[in-house]
Every structure is written in C-alpha cells, then in structure tokens.
Length: 384
Image (tube, rainbow, N blue to C red; front, side, top):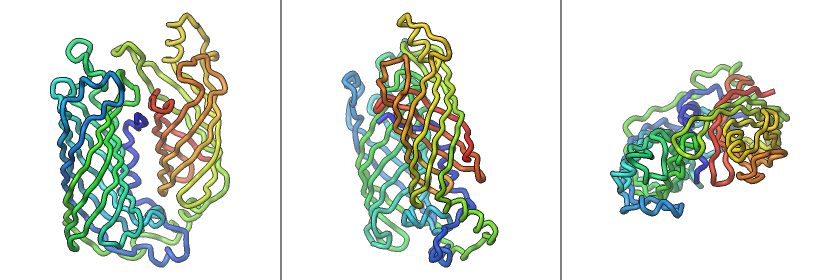
C-alpha cells in the first residue's frame, strides 16, 4: 500500500483545527448549529504487531514482533463546521506513534506524527462506538538505506517519509470522563519514490488504549457567525453546478540506482466536476504530464526524445470525498500517448485539495501505477 501523500499534514490540520466559514445548508441544521459540548481528550495506547514482508526481498529485515506506543490529543466535533453533520460528528486530533522496528541495525525506529479524523460508524450515541480512523502525516525512520553502511535496508531510502494510518476501533464509555479503546489497524511509511529504495514499511497492529477528557465547554449557538458569512458559505457549499478545475503541479523523484540525482516534473491537471451530494463529487478530465526521470530512463535504453516527445497526455475519471473546503480526490487515468511502457497504460492519483476563498486550490498529490508510486506533486490551481 504505497499510495501515500508526503506532507499531507500541511493541509489536513486546516480542516481539523481551523474555524472555517463553513455552515451547513439544510434548514433543520441551521437551527442546531452547535448541538453539543466541545470536549478535549488525552489518550494513550499500546500496540502489538509485526513488520509485513510484502516483497520477497524484504524478509531479512523482519526480526521479531513489534511493540509500539501512541499518544494523542483530540476533541469531538459539535457541528459548527458544515462537513461534520453528514459524517455524524467525528472526532479529530493529532497523534504521535513511536514504533521500534525490531531491527535496530538496519531499520531503527519509526516515528509518526499525524493529524487524524475518527469517523463514527453507526449511532454515535451508543455506549460502545465503532469508528474508522484515517490519518495522514509525517514519519521519520532513524535508519535509511546507505550504499556503504546500510545497504541491506532495501525498504526506505530517506529519513523523512509520509505516514498514513487506517484503523478500525471500538470505544467503550466507562463513564462521562473515561473510555477504553480496542483497535485493529495498519500504519504505513513511504516517501512516494522521492528517494529510492522505496518499498515502504507496512505495520499491521492490534491496540488497546485509554481516553480521558481534560476539558469541556458548552458551545454557543451561532457564536462568531454573521448572516452574510453564513449565506455566502452556504452558496459555495450547496453549489451543484459543473465546475472546471485547472492545476499546475511540480515535484521531483529518483531513479535506479539509488543515491543519484533528482529529476524534476511539471504537470497540468484539468477536470470537470459536479457535486452530487454533500459528501461526493464526480467528474472527468485531461492531464498533460512531463517528467525528466522518464526522459532519462528512455535515454538509458537508447531512445532519445525531445521535450514534446516526452509529454504524456492522459484521460481520467475523478471522484472526490468532500469535507467542507477540504476534499480527498481519487483519479483513475489512462495514457493517451507515452513512449515509456514499463509502467503500463494505467495510472492513479490520490490527492488532497483545499479551497481557499472561492477559487484558489492548494494541491498535494501522489501519482502511482496501482501499488507502484511514481512521484509526489505539489501545486496550485483555480476553480472556475
């Protein structure tokens, strides 16, 4: 599972902690904009799992089962942001996960710092609550590949990586102040092929945790909102017209053998999108992609192409999961033309978009070919 987003932590906190000018557009919800208490929690959990040898040449890195520790601070949502009601008032927070990898000589320790959202599954008022935790952030691996001193580490070529967490958990409320958590999840570290090798680290775990609330405040109905702001934001978020998104993105990546120079890229993404529900957008688009790494790989095979001959146009279908001004796009595309055939004819893109104002889009995305990451993209765009 190498589809990660390096530096997504730079964008996700905007949706989790920022007080956006977002207000739900249903009539019933306008009268209950602040339905509950704002509660702050501190939590600790113990994890037990293993390093998954998902490639045949990683077996020598797995030495023993892993015990790790996680600490986080979180707060419940109260409905004052428009995306919270459709998702049944999730919990958001930030966590630090320390994972000794059971191989101190070649892998060392993995440290993940990530913001997350706990999405309730079912009735959030039950004493036993099921949740899906989704988190993106930064990871640090203390032992990376080195051709002289650590050549057996074929999994990670950089200290700084992305960290993604997917976890199912059950929460038991002991009383108003304390809860117990049991969970089953997967933590993944990867650099998105920015530096090779990049097989990535997959760590399945089971966990038990304890949650204690440390602060509570009754929110004030419509506190801080003006009718003008509310009306303007409702118009943006309730808009179900077709819109065109155009983005200019750049980035860099590495090629074999590891430790060489970085190669740049410059891509144009375009899509036509329509919001079909408060949680979803669908559409299609065209990409124009250029990568110096592809041109270099072709030259190593005695295929010399011009800049224009190295362009990779592609057509795609698009889906976005909407969380207010932040959205999580997923795209499935096919090359209309490419001289480089090793990746095949299909590509995928996973992204985070954040809408600033009415039109400006901030983008971080990862282009992959199914389970094979190609590069990470950073850029800006405009929503027409």
